[in-house]
Length: 252
Image (cartoon, rainbow, N blue to C red):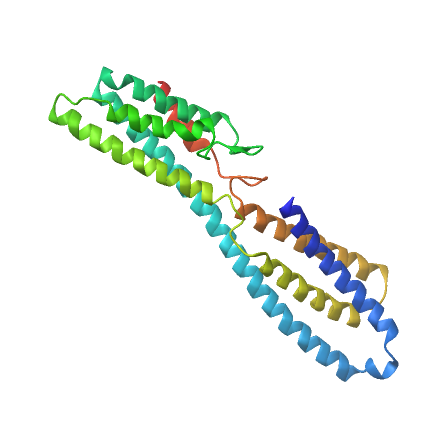
């Protein structure tokens, strides 16, 4: 809902700016429509266009970093799941209950969506959110009979701590990380930019179509940015393929 609202706001700002420029051209007297006036408007519009491009580039870079960071977190999470399962397998039959807990968590993480209503599989309040704590207790209950088992037990506990840390990190990455003021500021600049375009443009259907195409294009760009900023919800999400690989490794 928030992504759609911001996308509509940006598109509306572009259309409103173009319409305001065309309407302003009709209202102003002829002495305000001289070549010198158009040159000043052109320079001001160019300056605002550069500023808007810088802000848009900043938003794109931030969104890309957010998506890449979330993807790395999921891949690291899956790799540690595999390492923990391998350690439990090497430990011996005594670790079978802990392996079952780990397999259950991995299956739940892969089978469910990242979010389902208000119950997130990464949330500590959800059933799957407590599974890693159950894994810790299962590993702590192991009684090592050799130095190798003792070392494996410590390694698995360390990996469990890392899994807990990554889970909370992914949970925090679900929130919209940037301030809405950037979108509002960009919308204002786009409004004034297209007001300048409309002021200098002839009043015909081709210009109106061009403004409409620009509104859709800019709105689409903002939609993609906001989708990348929320990597666990919406249309653009991080891949769950690493979890599928981890689950396949555990079930073979």
